[in-house]
Structure formats: C-alpha cells, structure tokens
Image (cartoon, rainbow, N blue to C red; front, side, top):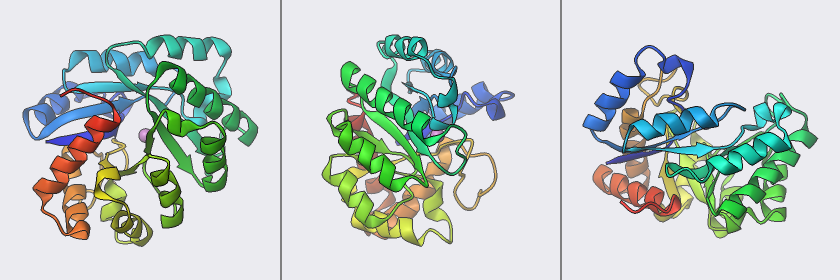
Length: 256
Ligand code: NI
C-alpha cells in the first residue's frame, strides 16, 4: 500500500471532485494519506477532512509563506488542535526564501515557535525549506527539533546536508521531482540515504511525477516515484512500497 506522507487535498484545485478522487484512491492501492495544512486558517479544514476517512490523517501548522499573519492566539489554537485524534504532526513549518512572502526574521520566529510547540505536544515536524539550507539547519539544531523528529519534506538540498538530517534522525521526503530529467542531485541523495530513512509524498495538487508533470497530482501517482526509487536502490517496487509504508508509520507513530 502507498503511504502519501504529504498531500493538500483541502486545496481548491480539488473542489469539484475531492470526494470522488479520495474514494477511488482508497478503493485502490493508497492506504494512508497525511493532509498537511499550509495556510494560516487551514488547520481546522484538514482535520475536518481527515475526520471523514479512516485512511486520512492531518498535520497542523503554518507554512513560512503565511506566517506574516501569525499571532500568539493562533499558535495557541493550533496547539489545541494538535490534541485531535487524527493529528499526527506539526506542519508544514520552515523557511522559504524563494518567495520571501514574510521577511526572514518573521519566518525564523514562527519556525522556532512551531518547533517548540511540536516538542510540547510530542508530535513530529514536517519541515518545508526552500533556498534556505543554512538557516534551516541552524534553527533545527538550535531549537533541537530532532527531539520532535520528523521529515524534510520535498528534499531539495545536497547529499552532505541530507547526511546532517539523517544523523539527527530525520526522514527524507521524496516525491514527483525524483522522476524529473533534471533531478540528478535528488537521485544522488536517494542513492546515499538509507532505505529506512526515506518516505514518499505527493505535495498534491503540485509536483506530479513524469509522465504527468505539470498536471494535477494525486496519491496514486506515487507509484511512479516508487518505480524510480526501486530502480535507484536496486530493489523491487513492492519492496520500496513496503519499506516506505513502514517508515511513514514509524515516523508518525501510527499503530496500523
Ligand atoms: Ni506541501
């Protein structure tokens, strides 16, 4: 079974056919999905969606693009939502210097605050980091995020940087990008990373793998990512699927 560790089915791109898509995925080979809140106000929405499907879980948190609107009150609300039975992680949180919607100082402040929150509620973190490799590593180390554990979602940095996260006990999140022609750096990371540290994800509706690149992504397409992962690791697709399932289950501390 496929375990999609990072999806956004609450996104408006699924507005017209969300229920049909999820029903057909869960009737097929998709066994579990974590829907990750990204916007300031989406935590309640992802929990509501997760509540509708036994195979669906939620992560609550605020994406670095959206932390400009954060407040102590909102952080306290998110902390309360972490107690929900379907909440398995705090995320996605981190730094994004590509779009730089919020300034660096604001991003760092709320990244650190949400790591502290994850440690208090004893849930793993889902970390988003784009064009911010050094600062992310510094905050992860400074805030001892490894005490919460979790995943570097949509990993896009070097093999050396991956080694630092793996040594701290983090998982490496791999998605559709692995199938792209220009993914040499990510292939090197996947070659290097121990198989028990890799989890698969869509980030849907974004980042569909080849041959659907540019189209709307969904969890079933993880099959193409698993094919490429199996090829790189020299194992069967079934083995890649089984191990990534087990890794995700362990990371989110799920009994299933
Ligand atoms: Ni995402």
